[in-house]
Structures are given as C-alpha cells and as structure tokens.
Amino acid sequence: MTELPAGLDLNDFEGGFEFSDSSSPDSSSEEFTGPVPVVAVVGRPNVGKSTLVNRIIGRRQAVVEDKPGVTRDRVPYDAQWSGRRFTVVDTGGWEPDAKDRAAAIANQAEIAVQTADVVVFVVDVSVGATDVDEAAVKMLRRSHKPVILVANKADNQNLELEAVSLWSLGLGEPYPISALHGRGSGDLLDQILDSLPPTPPVTEGGPRGPRRVALVGRPNVGKSSLLNRVAKEERAVVDSVAGTTVDPVDSLVEMDGDIWQFVDTAGLRKRVHQASGTEYYASLRTAGAVEAAEVAVVLLDSGDVISEQDQRVITQVIESGRALVIAFNKWDLVDEERRFYLDKEIDRDLKRVTWAVRVNISAKTGRAVDKLAPAIRRALASWETRVPTGALNQWLTALTQATPHPVRGGRAPRVLFATQAGVAPPRFVLFTTGPFDAGYLRFIERKLREEFGFEGTPVEVSVKPRKKTGPGGRGKAHG
Image: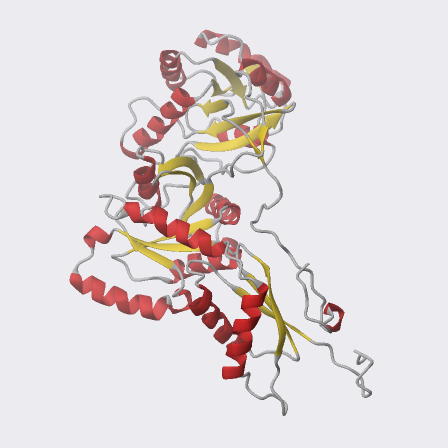
C-alpha cells in the first residue's frame, strides 16, 4: 500500500480505491519451460485440419469455415493432454504442383513437417484416399518423421468402417475420428502422446520469456513481409492480394541480440460486429493477439493516405493498454512530394498519438528494419515506468499552483494527493476536492509526458473526488 499523507483517508473518496502493483498483464509468477514437442497437422485442403486443431487444444482458436483455403500459414498453438504439454501446428492445405499462393501455402506445410516431432496426416474418410493424399504420403515419407494417419469426418459407425480402406496408403492403422463432434479424439490424443519424444522438465525462476509483439494493421500493409524479414525466413505467406493472413502467426525471432515473440495478425477491415464468417473470427483472433501482447507494432502504408481503418487499429491498441510503435512501411516507395503530404496527414490524423514511437521502414528491402528493436524497447521501457510517489506529488503541486484548475461553482477543485496505481500501462490516480474537467486531465497527462517521458505508451489519469459532507461538515451527504 502506498503511504498516504497524514489526515488523508481513502474512505473519504468516492468509489473507494485499491492500489495495484501489477507490472504486466500477467504479473503472476510464471513457469518457464524449455522446448516442447511439436505436432504438425497436415493434409489436403478442406479435410478438417483446423477443426481437429481446435479439438486438440480444447477451444475454438483456429479459424474454421466450410470452404478450402482458410488456413494459409503454419500456426502454432499450446496444447496439453494427460498432464503433458506440446505444441500443435495447424497448416494450410497441401497440394502437389501448386502454383502462386497455393505453392507458398504448401511450402509452409512442408516446413511444418520438417520441424515437427510427429505428423498427424488428416484424410477425409467420407471421400476416401485421393491422388492428392497419395502424393502427400510420398512427401511425408521423404521427411522420415513418424506419421499418424487420421480418418476424419467419421461421424457415425458406417463411416468409421470406411476407414479400413485407408490402409492402402501404407501409413499403418488409420484412426477414425470426428473432429467436429469429438468422436475418437481421446484415443487419437493418447496415440499422439505415445509417439512424442519426452517433454523436458519444467524449470522455474529463470529469466522472463521473450517480449510479445503483435504486428497489426489493415490488410496488405506488409505485416507478413515484415515478419519474414525479421525472422530471416518465409515464416508467413505473402501475397499482393489483401487478406492472406487469417490466423495469428506466432514466431520466435532474433532481432538486435534478443529473442522476441512476434505475432502476425489478420488485417482489420471492418468493425468486428460488421464482419462475418472467416473475417469475423479473424478479427477476434487479432483482438486476442493484441490483448496477449505487450507492445503492438501498427504498420501503415507510407504510400497511402492514413485511413479510418488505420485510425481504428491504433484506437484498438490504445484501448487495450498496450505499448505502441507506429511503423511506416514501404518507405522505399515514398518520394519528396509524398513525404510533404504525409507530414501534414500525421499532424492532422495522428495528433492524439504524438507520443507513439515512430519508425520509417521497408520490409521488402530491409531498409531501417534494424531500428525496430530499439523502438520497441523504448516503448516497453515507458510502458513499465514507475514514478516515485514523492517526486510525482512534488511535481504535481508545482504544476497545479502554476496553472490551477478553472473555477467551477465559485471555487477551483484542488489535488490533495496523487499516486501511480500501476504500470503496463502507467496509471495515475489524483485524490481531489472535487471533479476535474476532462480538458484539465488532458493537460496533466500532457505535462506528465513532458516531465517523465512515457514515449510509446498510453497513460491513464483518473480522479477520485472527496465525498460531499453534510451541513455540519462532519456527516456524509445522503444520495
């Protein structure tokens, strides 16, 4: 509990108050682990891979829709069964001789196979083994990885019997399941655990894990290209067609000497309640990725006018209370005339986030991408900054004496005491003699930033007015 000045009692303030010393969204003690086994779920398009992934992890996390091609990248999720932890990787549909974007999706699936400890190969039992399935088997054999054959969509006993025909694929016993209804999923999970290498022991008390960074922005601003650039590999599918990424894609990348956990997210097109189908769930996943992150890098296309969509993405980050870096991508395509107009747009449209850390980069050419890590570090340092209570009150007293609150109702409300209630983001509470105008609170926030920094983080300033007293000045007023 923060020490209060003599004579000041929190019970005398409206709404009461609880001090919080949490320093992060997940400030409780964490368990730190080594690498866990990896299970890749692969198969041709529309056999139910993402539905199976959701069944394995026990929640609707992977985006599912009744049409092929919804999943495009390899997307890892944490899973647990019978007390053992592992990572399950959802992949896009694999097809032989694929072209263009389909080839990139197939390549991601093959990389998932190469980096997995066990492969779950999914076949639609209601269709049977196809030429594409047989071609996939050849690819799997070349990987020399253990493969579990899953006969999915065995929604009833008759379809379950059809799984016998899949012995012809030469991958051993097929496991008939219904990922949609859960039929046979427990037996499959037991088999997965039997095929996994031993999980390393849990170690506690180690250094904190990688800082979590969400890449967000409207479609086609270059989020996946930036992820691939910092990861130094084709980690996410990139296409000139907007909306290639649907699921958030997690990647551990090394940048400027540190390991970071980057999450590439779907481009936000519409408000969530106006979206439908895949786009609706992708929007929810993106919102969840921002909430789970510590800092968000909002990508803007330097060559385009700053749009309402861009502003909505920035608002989402601010409302989530995350540190903020704004990266103007495709800077290699910006000429002098565009820079002139862009400066005017920034002054006009980003006036409310002048505190955000800004960098100009080109994910395609790699220009100034090395400035991204220092920018993220500055934003995170501000996000976790705590101002000593004594220094805060000394500064605030001088400020309010020099520029007092405007007179309201014949008198001006005063600050009796101030404290920082928490960090990540910084939150300040002012105990006052009466309500403060919103404009004066904005003035205090601006001066807080000038004095103490807070570059790259939202700052919350709230007021706790003293309760009104009765006519005798002792009792509290009714109502």
